[in-house]
Length: 117
Image (tube, rainbow, N blue to C red; front, top):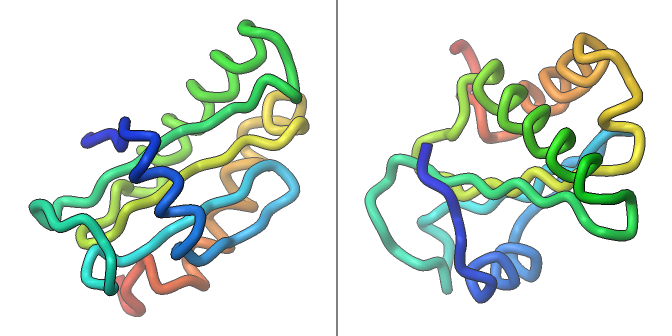
């Protein structure tokens, strides 16, 4: 899994990316083919962000672990896309199956997953 580590690239993603909202997290994604995108191999990259305003280090680490597991279960990262998983407060309080179901529903309705896969 390739990780987006550069804060400049993450800021760029927030400005040009499309957003998908769930009660547990927000998914920001952008095609690597869009104008202004940083070009690299088309394997797809991800970033996992859990902000300090939602909790302490224990909560942030737990939220990131959960988001990484969700990304793996959803067959991510997706080829040709940069994706950011942004945690919301309830991501660690809800059951894993609820979070996964909510994320799967919105990802399947997006352009991340090709129709018919």
